[in-house]
Length: 333
Ligand SMILES: [Zn+2]
Image 1 (cartoon, protein in one colour):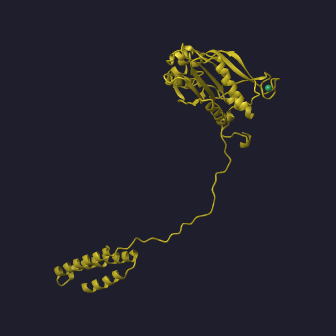
Image 2: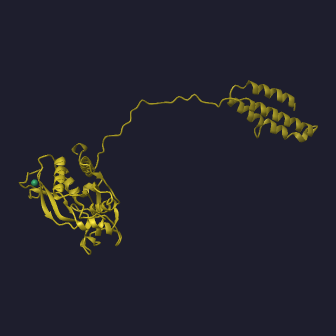
Image 3: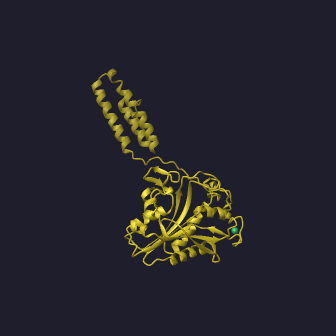
């Protein structure tokens, strides 16, 4: 083979190329594994002067390689045109907030306006915070496995009331007084699930601790809450009740909005709807949290959201609230 002729031919070819794709084709043809140069190397043995032939072939290979490298083309770019469709995407408006979430947010808004912080804490708690620190007497039936869902008896359980959040709050903030906090929360009881009972339900609680807090502050705050939520004409009465974590304890009842107190199926002919439990925080509870009850006092109140939401939305089976099929239209909420 005339190596000089090969050099001339390929030098011309390489010089004439105008893009990197063509140059790559020449490089493969010449220097690829099955290319011309390798083919010539395989013929060394048959050459008249293998040594000289080999040396010349190496020179040819290097020259052409360098020539190819010297051609510095920009990478091949395809003239791609971005195809866009003039479509507007939006999510279908078929979802809505859970009615309990709506009530929780309404309450958060009321309490935020009153200067309360919205607080939260874990759902798995120790029995100390769920019972002892709330002044629940030892061997109280509530501590029984029949009533409480234990994760690991006797120490770890699913909180049975939002007052448990209060235990953590009082301890964590005992050096940060005054406290003004509100918190929604899911709570758990070992209940058989049927149309009127469920093992998970929802409560809302508010706590205030400061110097000189009295029952008057409690009643005033609750009145304001009910009026904000249910209008200025709402009538609320307070009855004495016993809860271990408060002293004295009260239970607010709201006059039935459906019958204005005359009695109907909604209020089971009582004329009143029970709205939860409240009271002045027991001095023992304050002491256990490291707060001096001779200097500070406070109130706490909690209300169940499930039954109230059921009454509001005319839901007759509590399981509906925990299911995936809340059978009413968004505009009813
Ligand atoms: Zn009624």
